[in-house]
Amino acid sequence: MNDRKQELAERTAEVREALAHAARQAGRAPEDVTLVAVSKLHPASDIRALAETGQTEFGENYVQEALSKQEDLAGLDVNWHFIGGLQTNKAKYVAGKFALVHSVDSSKLAKALHNKAVSLNTVQDILIQVNIAGETQKSGVETERLPELAEEVLGMEGLRLAGLMTMPPFFDDPERARPVFARLRELRDGLETRLGVKLPHLSMGMTGDFVPAVEEGATLVRIGTRIFGARPPRG
Ligand SMILES: *Cc1c(COP(=O)(O)O)cnc(C)c1O
Image 1 (spheres, protein in one colour):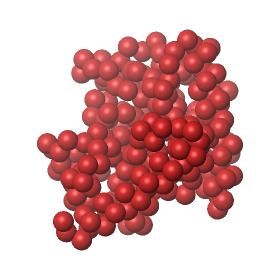
Image 2 (spheres, protein in one colour; image 1 turned 60 degrees about the vertical axis):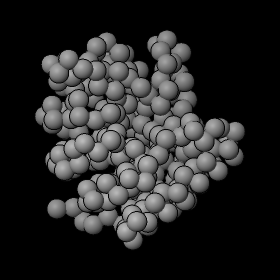
Image 3 (cartoon, rainbow, N blue to C red; image 1 turned 120 degrees about the vertical axis):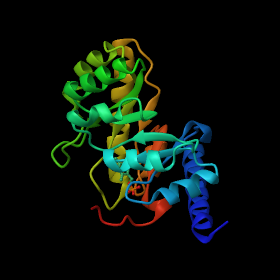
Image 4 (cartoon, rainbow, N blue to C red; image 1 turned 60 degrees about the horizontal axis):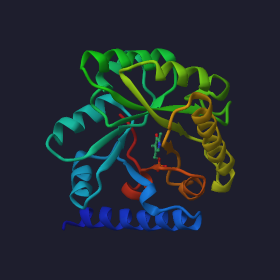
């Protein structure tokens, strides 16, 4: 194993350990928490190296960068997650190319993904991103509008709604993010009852706040810095 691969393997093993600990702490099974390694702005070679150690889920934020990595790594057996803000006019490049799109936050975007998925004769798995803390963040549907958007998505045969995602504002103390995570779980539970569907996934928790996220029910955690180190600047 080269040095970088060794480093990535060790860091990821530490994260897995911490995730498992947090899960057990909350009486949850460690297998119920999936680690999405957020590789944005890191080279395709890092993804390949980490994939060779058994990591299967990778998260990317930028359409162009993600598609070019997919091309570079064609044949590598991994699942791609689109977790970044997505403009409606780029939805056509994303539908069908990612195992899960975490960041659907408007009916226009949902429709665009649906249209492309239908034209590809496929079904795109998605999460709805919810803006829980308000003000400080721009992405995510407002909680008041969530039921309406969820209902719309459920009517689109090109999409399969698998759950919810949120990204709290940055807090120095991760405990301050806990109420946001708890709220996402409550919103999910409410939708399941109201709409009579199963929404198994809660995508929440990043490098700085994954412990409370797992304790509050995260099934997908999106971790970048803790695995890959600091990101180089974009551009
Ligand atoms: C970059 C990013 C992450 C990973 O953040 P880290 O703090 O590096 O773990 C997770 N989720 C989203 C939506 C991101 O944009």
